Length: 370
Image 1 (cartoon, rainbow, N blue to C red):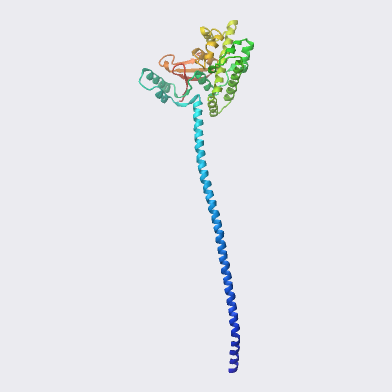
Image 2 (cartoon, rainbow, N blue to C red):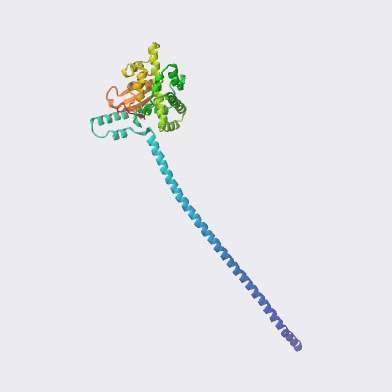
C-alpha cells in the first residue's frame, strides 16, 4: 500500500513539470488572445474615431453649407418680396395716374374736401351735393379726368361699363365704311382738314386715321358689350380707359359719327327729303355751324384740344348713341335747370346714363345706392 502510494506520488512528480509547461503555454495563449482582442478593439476604436472625425467634419461642412444656403435664400426672398412690393406699388401708381376714370369715392366726403370754407359758392355747392345724397340717392361718384374729352369719356365709360349695345342704326350699317362713304359717295373732300383733337393732325392721311379710329371703337364696343360678367367688364373698362392712345381714338370716332350725321341731315334739308330731328335744325341755325364744314372747322376740330362739347352737341351725342343722358348741374341748384336730359325727347327703350357737373365743362359719374 505504501509502495503503491509512493509510485503514485513519484508519477505525479514526473507529470508536474509537463503540467506547468502546458499551463504556461495555455496562459501564454490566453495572454496573446487577450492582447490580440485588445489590439483589435483599440484598432477598431481608432478607426471608428478617425471615421467619426471625417464624418463630423463632413457634417459640419454640410450644416454650414445648408445654413449659408438658408440665410442666402432668406435674404433673396426678402429682397424679392421688397422688389415685388415696390414694383406692385409702381404699377398701381402708374395705373392710377393713367386711369382717366378713378375709383368711386364718397359723395359727401368729396364735397367736403372740394368745397371748404364759408363762401356763398361753397355753401351752395355743399347744399347741392347734400340734395343729391338725400333726395337722388347718389352716394358715390367717380372722378373723370379734367380735359377737353371729359364729357365724351364720362359718357362712353358708362356705356361700356353698363354693357349697353350699339344703337339700332349702327347695327344696320357698317360704321367702318362711314369715312369712305363720306369721302367718295358724298364728295366731302374737305374731311382732309379734320383735326384729331390735341394731335392737331390734318392732311392726306386723315382718311386712314379716321378708319383706324372707327375700328378701335367698333372692336372695343363689341368685345365689352358681349362680356356678361360685371366685374370682368369693369376690368376691361379700366384697362381701356388707362390707354390714352386708344381712348383718343374712341373719342375721335364719336366726333366723326357726329359729323357724318350732320352731313346726312344737311343733305336731307337741301333735298327737302323726310323731316329731320329738330336738334339738327337748332345746330345748323348757329352762325358758327351753318353747314357741315363750318361745324367741323369751328367746333369738332377743337373738341379734345381747346374746347369741350357744348349743350347742343350734348343733345346730338345722346341722340346718336340712343341713350338718355341725365345731367345734374350743381351750379344750377334750386332752379329748373338743376336736372336736364339730353336729348329732352327720347324713346322709352333707350338706356339711361347720368353725369354730374359743377360748371357745364367738366363732368363726373354719379353712382346710385338705395
